[in-house]
Image 1: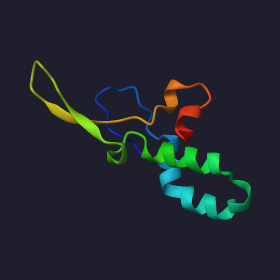
Image 2 (image 1 turned 90 degrees about the horizontal axis):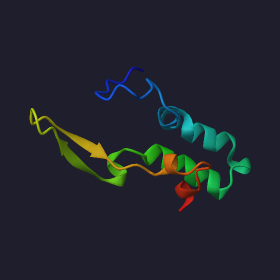
Image 3 (image 1 turned 180 degrees about the vertical axis):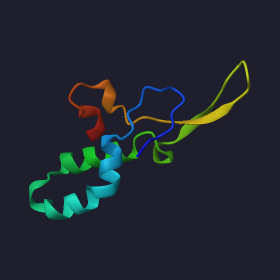
Amino acid sequence: MIRPDSRGNRPAIEIADILRRHGDAYRRVHAGHLGRVERRVMSAIVACRTEALGGHMEACDDCGTTRVAYNSCLMGKASNGELAAI
């Protein structure tokens, strides 16, 4: 899966892409071994940078091009992901 990105710094596939595709099956297979924190972190990763967390419009001052910038789950702001479980 190749994702067009004007910033050019995002990978072609992310953990969120994998969890969106396989997360439900993984949760079913490992239901007895996943705790509340693990399930919440998985959900936060899936919701990150999607309309689920809201967003805002960004516009280029030079050409007027606009795009939606979705809010982050803030997991990248903490070294161990503790903010995802909030």
